[in-house]
Amino acid sequence: MRAALAPLKPTEGLEVRSFEAGDTQALGALMYRAYLDTVDYEGETPEQAAAEVAKTIKGEYGTFLPSCSKVFARSRSLLSATLVTRFQDRPFVAFTFTEPESAGQGLARACMQSAMNELFAQGERELRLVVTLANTPAVKLYTRLGFEFERE
Image 1 (spheres, rainbow, N blue to C red):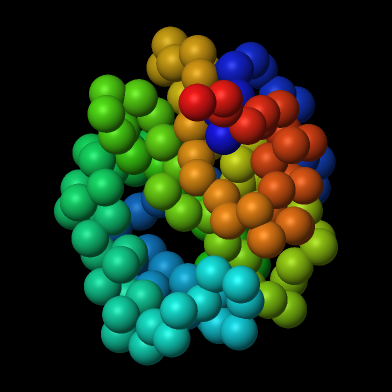
Image 2 (image 1 turned 60 degrees about the horizontal axis):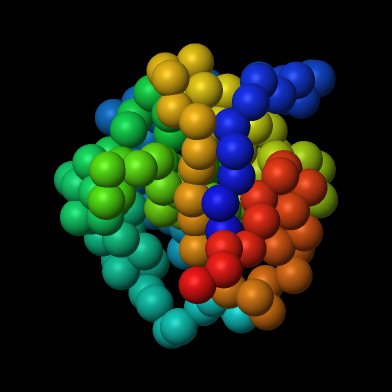
């Protein structure tokens, strides 16, 4: 999917911040919990989820963009994240995930909007991502944010 970037109004009442190096371990645990028993879960262990986050940050899926990667925390616990890279010379959402108990509260939307605004402020004009079509909540979120399916 791809979206043209334009300034978006931040989600009121949800304070999103940029990724910090100290977030890495907590993001691995959050990713595991977020994907467990979903359509995107492929039997990964908590250690494999942590390794996936580490690979993203180290640039395995394109250059990691920490200032454009956003997290939402409450009481010092990470509840949602959007990790952004530069893949094939374009901004790319590598992962977006939310604590299952916090789903439906607008946290993923807030992280995505903040990432999109940061990318726009840095001069980017489009953002791409890949989504599992059976993940209807994600498809719905991305569509509401202006993403469209790309035609081959």
